[in-house]
Length: 215
Length: 215
DNA sequence: TTGCAGTCTGAACGATGTTTAGTTCGCTCC
DNA sequence: GGAGCGAACTAAACATCGTTCAGACTGCAA
Image 1 (tube, each protein chain N blue to C red):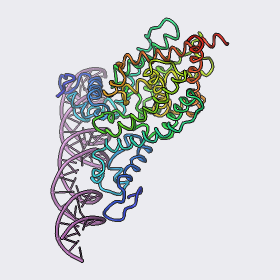
Image 2: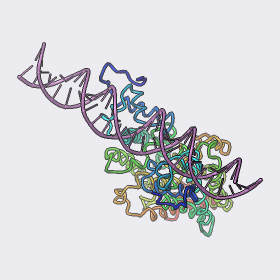
Image 3: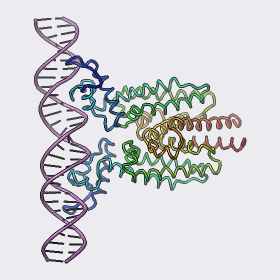
Image 4: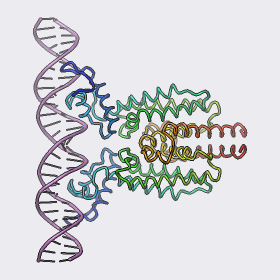
C-alpha cells in the first residue's frame, strides 16, 4: 500500500499530488486504459472515494495531467535555441517532438478529444491556448524577417504546427512506434526528428531565396 | 432493442456486421469512451456474451473498425487526382485530411496505440502498411521527377506524412476542433486543409526551382 | 433421424467510476 | 482548554463494463 506517498495518519499529506504522480506512473506503465482512479487511490494508500475530494471525476484528473503537460511543453518551446528565426522555428519544432518522445504519457493525454470541450476544464484550455500562442509568435517573427511566406499567417502556422504534431503523434502512437519500423528506417526517433525538421527548414530557406529574388 | 439489425429467430443473420455498425454509431455519438461491447450487443438485440463468437475481445472489434478505416483511406488516397507528381502529392494529402474530417470515428480508432502491437492484429498492420506504402510510392514518383528533394527519402516521406497526419489530428481531436477556434481562424476545416496543403506545395515548387537552377 | 458444430442465452466474476452516509482530523474561536 | 466546524477520508453500495462458462437452440450433413 501507499507506495507513492507517505501519510502520517488519517489525513494524507498531499493526496492531490500523490494521485497525480500515481496516475502518471500508471500511464507510463500501461497507457491510457491503465489509468484508473481506483488504482491511483490504492497506490496513494487511500480509499476509492478519496480522490473525489480533489478531482470531480476521472476526466478532471486527466485534465490536470494534460495541463501540467502543456505547461512543460510551453517551457521547453520557450527555451528552444536557434540563431535566426528560421532556426528558431526549427528548434521549436524539434522541442515539440522531443517533448512527446520524452513524455509520451503526458503527450497522449494532452490531446484526448474528451478534454477538448472548452466549457469543462477552462483552465486547461487557457494553458493550451498559451502554448499555441507561443508557436504563433515564433512564426510571426520568422515572417517579419522574410523567412516564411507572408500572407496566410494562419495557413503557415497550421502547417508548422501540423508538421511537428504529426511527427510527434506518429512516433509516439502510430504505426511508426513499433519495432518493425526500425528495420525499414535506419534512424532513431531523435535522428528522424532532426532529419525531418531539417528537410522542412531547407524547403523554407530555398523558398525564401526564390522570394528574395523574384519579389 | 435491436435497432440496428433484424433477426429471424434464435440466430442473428449477420451479427458481426451488425456489431460493427453499432460500434461505429457509438463512436460517432460519444467517442471512444462510449464504445462498449455491451452497448453494441444491446443495439444488435443480442446478449452480452454473443459478440465473443465474432471478436475475441473489445480490442479485436476496434481493430476490425481500424482495418476498415485503413482500407477506405487507402482507396481515397488511391483515386486522388493531380496532373503532376507535386499536385498528386498535394491531393493525396488533402484526401488524407478529408478522410479524417469525413470519418472522425474511424480515424480516431485507426491510430490508437493499444492497436499498434504488431503481434496481435497482424492483418490490421498489413493493411496499415499497405496504406503507408501508397504514400511512399507517391513520394518516390515525385522524387523521380525532381519535385521533391532527392536523397533522404525516409525524411521526406515522414515530413509529408507528418504534415497530413498532424493537420488531420489537430482538426479532428485537437484544440483546433473547438468552436472558439473558428473565431480566430476564419476558415472552415476544408478551406484550411486546402490552404495548408497549398502552402506546403508552394514551398516544394520553389525549392525545386532552386535545385533546378543551382544543381 | 441423428449427430454435430456453430450460435446465442443467462448468469456469474472481478474491476471500474461514482455516490452516499458516517468517521476522523486539524483548526479556530470562545 | 474545550466546543464546534469544515475538510479529508473510510466503507459500503450501485450501475456499468469486459470477459467467461455451462447450457440451450439452430441449421446442416451424414
